[in-house]
Image 1 (spheres, rainbow, N blue to C red):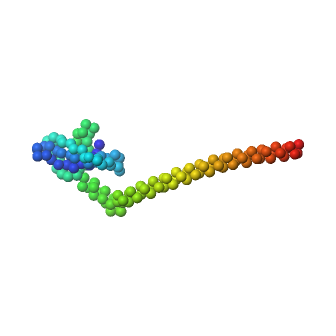
Image 2: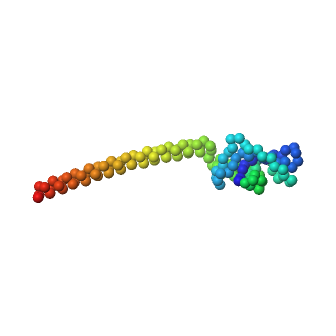
Image 3: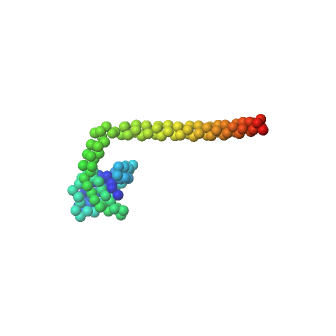
Length: 141
């Protein structure tokens, strides 16, 4: 599992301290922890990374890989923030999508109601046609 973490070292030589900030859910989705999770590891040769890092942990919470997060964060800034995608913009888009969804739901319900009305009218028309046929047959017969 991949995490965004703050990396530091305890005064005890060989102790690596990770403060897990967020966890990757999918390629483009991360979930921030409400309370960062702290972990300490004994490292014979700790990596030369301080500050934010991308940390891959095994299922047994062993460090598989640790990379400086600077390039990754700069790419996010370039990709999203420099193109005008902000938290406010994303919130507005989410609200707009929700309004659109609600509008489509109402339209679908209205269409369903109209379909039922048409089916009822078709039934009435068919009954009238049958009565007219029977009336015509009685007059002609």
